[in-house]
Every structure is written in structure tokens, then in C-alpha cells.
Image (spheres, rainbow, N blue to C red):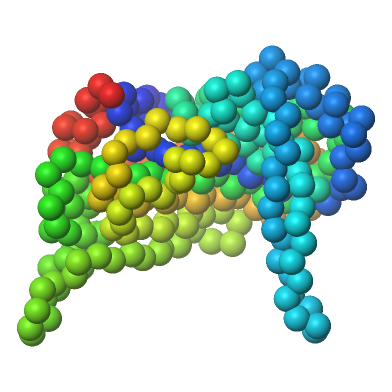
Length: 263
């Protein structure tokens, strides 16, 4: 697939893979113990994940608290969560695509050995980037680091008063069965909470440009079986679409002065 540079100082704060599969019954205590045994070399910590499921009905809004089996690394930088309809892999220490792919492979292999799901419904890969750069004193300073396609709104001037002080937006690339959603904008602080369950290397708070890429693939026609052979190539294609967009959204100056600098 060609050489792709691995930057020593990437802006990636969180990577998430969600593999949606056909609905299953809840995992039993015995299932969860077996999953822990299969994953113990890499994900030895069992730490259930709590979330609120919101549904709408004629009676109004219903909220249900759910608890999903989750297994984490000892440094708390990566996790695998099993839900009735999906497998979610998350990491705050992304190294390269092949490493993330291997974590997903482990997650799928364990699930299919313990309590198999019948088929694949969607693969989604999300990369949340907090782009930080030196000497950011105002919105206009982002022009050196981010493509004009995302910063040109800063050139707009009202008849009186200052120009745009912040902005955010969304763009969708692709179609029904494969594509990428881009969320972007100027923010302060963090896009990924440093105090969350997953630990991360935390830069000082301050201005950052959000580049949030959510790339996906959905099967056409029949539902493929949940086998690794049906996942791997679509995982790579989905991840590479996001990579290609990211490379178009940053400037050469950002590559040279920030990404290629050691941490």
C-alpha cells in the first residue's frame, strides 16, 4: 500500500474502531470470564463501561443505564468493549495502522471463540486530532498550519468590528456504503478529556484546531460473516481514507515544524 510516514509528534488524541455486528444476547458471567482469559496478555484489567442509552417512544424519552464488559491495558491507554451489537476498540496511544488493526483482530478472535456473532453490519474508524502549534495568538495564525480550505473563513470581514474569532464545521465525503465525516474548528482546552477512563499524554491546555475524522464502510447486499478475512481489507481501506484527508488538511510547515519534531 506504499510508504506512509509515521510522525514522531502526532496530534492524535484518541483512535476508536467500532465494528458493528448483528445483535446478540448479553454476555454471561462465564462468557466474560472466558473473554478475560483470551485477552489477558494484552488487556488484563476487567473494567466495565457504563453508558446511558436514550430511546424515544410515544410515552416520551426513555433513559436506560447499561453496563458493558470492557478490558483494558495496565497503562490504561487502550480498551476493548463488547456490546450486544458491536465491538469497540479505543486507544490514546496510536502507533500505526497495523497496531490498531491487530488490537481489533484480538478483539474479534476472542468474541468469536466465546460467543460468536453472525455477521458484519458496519466498520467505523474515528481519529480525533487536537492540532496544536506554536505562536497561536488569534484565528488568523492557523493559516500557517491548516489548509486554506478550512481557515479561509477567517478572511471574511464584517462592515464593523473584528472578523471571525472562532468557527466549526462538518463535511461528508463519500456515499452510503463508504465515506468519511470530517468535523473541524477552533477550540480551547481539549477535545478528549484528560480525566477520562483512558489515560493520555496531556499537553498544556490552550488553543487547538480540531480535525475529527470518522471513516466508515457498510456492506452492500448480503451481510458478510464475522470473519477476519471479511474485515481486514475493509479496515485498511477505511483507515487510509481518513489518512489521505488528514494529509490534505495540514500544511508542509506543520509537517516540518511540528509533526516531525520529537516529543
